[in-house]
Image (cartoon, rainbow, N blue to C red; front, side, top):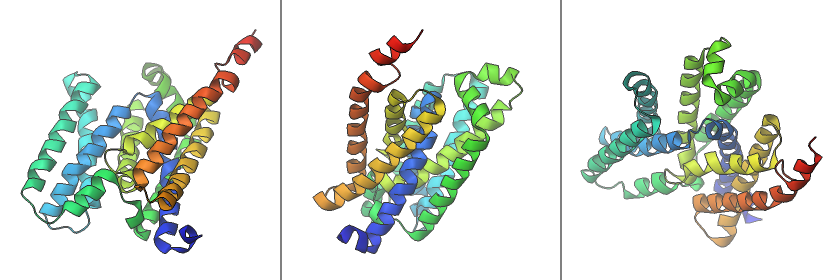
Length: 278
């Protein structure tokens, strides 16, 4: 039972129990709005944020990561409105630009290789109480926001033009969602790293969609799958002496394939479900 007695493992389990469901909840709307590439762009911008933090002498890179990621996220939305370019073109431009900038800055610095590895691949074992409190507050905010604004969020995800006609302030909803998503991605990088954070936003919601018949069911299923894969992944990494972030992601992928097989018999698209429809 060492996993429950070691303080760093307790913090790791709490972090996984908060951040994995948080990503899964937001991921339902990320996948519905086809924004998976957006989360990857914001995550990779954190590399430039890390480099800027070290360049100005900060010992903790999270503030710089958050500022740069928010600037990149706002730039995506602004350039989409002003330039008329497609989202994927804008995001590819900013993703490659931020990675190039971060790499150039880090090439001029010395002594930060351990921190760079942590940002790229995650290190939930090093998560602190401040980050846990911030993550818990963010989870509470997202849950309350999703419960209060579920109808407009669902309509925007389904059809933005129809949401405009219905009188929903789509632009402000988009900016608010982008800010929350960016903050979540930045914090979750501590869990699985830049290279894998997109998986937590995509895989549990994708598995939940296979098993669900409506949006509410999909949200709760995604949260449950995220919580299980996060905590079980931490436990697996402890028992097998494996990297924590990759363990969580591989377990999530396993659950996805289990959901894929299960959905063939019990999901909304199964033969039994089709046969029961009038």
